[in-house]
Image (cartoon, rainbow, N blue to C red; front, side, top):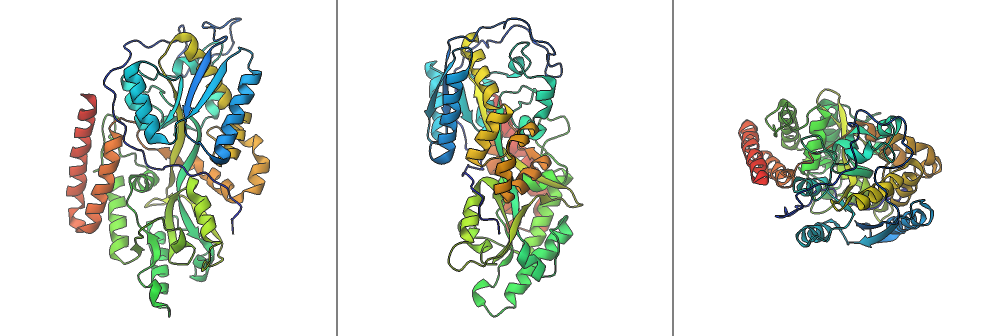
Amino acid sequence: MFTSIVLSLVLAACAPAAAPTEAPTEVFVPTEAPMATEAPTEAPAMPSVDPTGQTVIFWRVWGSGLSNDTMLEIVADFNAANEWGITVEDFDQGNYAPLEDAFNAAIQSGDLPDLVTGYSNAMSNWYAVNSVVDLAPYINDPYFGLSAEEQAAFYPGSMDGGKAADGAQFAFPISQSANVITYNTTWAKELGFDSAPTNYAEFKEQACAAQEANSNDDNPDNDGTGGLVLYASASNVASFVFANGGTMLNADKTGYNFSDQTVVDVAEFLKDLQDSGCTFTTESYPNPEFASRKALFTMTSSAGLIYQASAFDAEGAIKDDWTIIPFPGKDGGKAVDLFAQYVAIANTNPERMMATWVFLKYLTSPEVQAKWVAGASYYPTRSDTDAFLTDYATEHPLWVVGKDLVQYGMAEPAWPSWTSVRREVQNSFSTLLAGDTADIPTVLADLDATAAQAIIDTQQ
């Protein structure tokens, strides 16, 4: 049983962010740089913007425990060693909601920090009003930019989650976690299954076998349990859609499309699984249920696995082996929903922004990112970080399983409208699960209309 894992709790859902009403009208950028597909091959002798002696104000979360200690150490190391005399001043803002409120207030006052942590959908609001900037000119800066090889090392899923509809990279991923399925391998084998399900039919077979086992044993307290703990959050729905090859967007990526067959298949699958009696719900996080054979499957963020591991050490827990698996698609696809930890550069002045990029480049360099990942128990956002995580991987085998799932990762839309649309996804799926299967097309069509209006509302 994997109980040595140490993971930090991060919010999986994107909190709503109030859209600011005023913002700078001009965006400062370095001198002309190639497009993102044309990375610099040879650096000039001197930078176009001199960051020497600048102070970078960094607003972030992770204000306690090993995550906080690790970030403080990274900042101190950068301040002591960078050749430009740049000083990063680190300010913990508590968690995401008060940070977003503080940044929105800073937009109004004009007293912006330089580097800010946040959810990508909140950052998309800030980008829309020119308060954070497109990072492409910095990524491709002839002097301070990333080489083509360095750019290729970043996982596309985590980078895509920080892009606007126009392709601008307004948010940069420093680490990531993933939405995964927990799976009790010991119990599954006792039920006659030697491997994890890879499609809808196999998933239903295993979930229903677990439900039947609990209904027919001599313990009346577990009747009605056994299969999947079903919570129709937007992240869980998105994970299943991604596994079907869908995106929840229309073909030209200008709007949402929840009537797409990849979404319909998810709705019909979850409705059938529930109507077959092979799902149940819990009042809180289902960690105790999973650790006591009341659930063969649960859906969770990898950042919360520390609590699942602890549940197996609690009184009454069954000492089973368990693992994490990707979400299966109808016909054998697999996916996880990536939750990246993003930062953005505020629109201040050229020297401050270049100094901020120099620190951001340092923060996401392979060796430094490895230090952050190990301290916060996230996953890296670039493949060349792995070489610096061999010892950590040996000590944390379940973390390795999760890291291997990152290759199947996709990100939820980084659109301002997604703040409200993701709430409507959960509401709509709750409605269709409570209704008739025949109502699914109507419920999804209504969701399309609501999502289209959300786009209009955020553009006004």
